[in-house]
Length: 181
Image 1 (cartoon, rainbow, N blue to C red):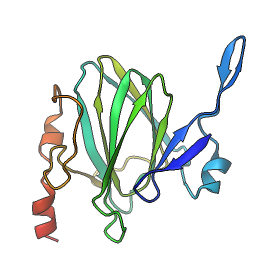
Image 2 (image 1 turned 135 degrees about the vertical axis):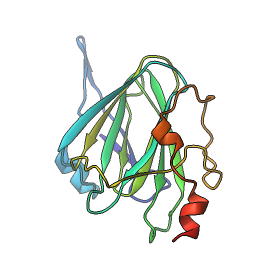
Image 3 (image 1 turned 90 degrees about the vertical axis):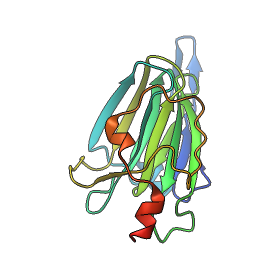
């Protein structure tokens, strides 16, 4: 695997290294030792899959707070997504910085999302499937979120929004969160 750190400290794009022959190819998508060598913790405690019918669908921006913070390894297994993360670690030099990358069925790329990073994506085509590996169990009551259209973040989504959950539309804007801090 090829690990490339993003502009947000601790977040990585992970590309596979294909071993090809007449049958096709084989590639490792996860190795605990290789992740540990890069200082990344992802013990597979829970895996999830999300299927999205329409292009332009947004899921996110979600994160969890202590004691239930989650690191994620995200991969698009069908179709394509624009995947976005936001550093929510108050003492981080990249606090409130965001980074986006296309994860596609064709590029077979993964994104490592550290704990205390908000995460969301937009589907770039219909019938898109995304697989998540998490290092902790989902714990209700510790989930938080950001508005996908928060002006303080200025995330430039690739398509107009076609679908988004009511819950994701009800997250508050950062300005109100920061004023109350």
